[in-house]
Image 1: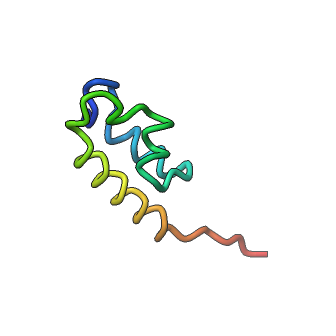
Image 2: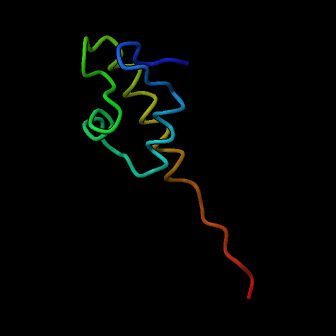
Amino acid sequence: MYICMCNAVTDHDIRRAAADGVQSFAELQSRTGCSDCCGCCEQEARATLDQAVAQVAFTLPVLSVA
């Protein structure tokens, strides 16, 4: 689903950015251009980023058995 129509940023793009280490809205804007134009998408973009960051934070690494 498109979150930012002005810069064609999707929810998938935001989740991928969070998985790549983006944790702040300013960093998301810098990397994707999301909400840099009209700003109408800011609330939805922030909510999507917050949810994605929370999911990444709770992902535990798989440990290999020696």
